[in-house]
Image 1 (cartoon, one colour):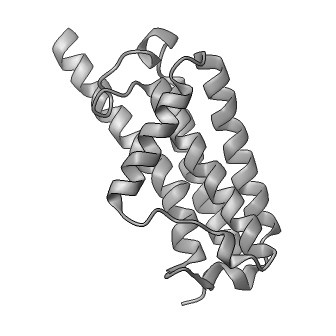
Image 2 (image 1 turned 90 degrees about the vertical axis):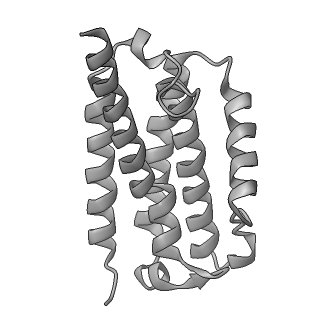
Length: 162
């Protein structure tokens, strides 16, 4: 099965809209409440999502330029956790509005990098993973994962507050 760029763009856009829909249903004060994913708030998730989407954009640019060796995936789950903790700490004192903007810009950067990527590079294997799968994991699958977690957290709030 060949992966088409229009299909990947559609998945990216649909997942982004799903995430935006759930984010739009929250007040600023709800976005600051811890406990959505472990102790992270929605604000923390915005920075987390932005980091990985920016990494996806950077990786696609490297792949498009034939610099496959510049793609640096985490070696394992422990390294992923270290990166996540590092990025959360780096953003913890930043205001909500700044993180919303960073998240929006990261989506735009990922989308632009995907649009610029030669379509045949979507199926290229780079450091053991096809470009499409790495990009999807860092963007649209990631958006869907966290949109679902936020919705589950909202339902939990409704049952404990109601």
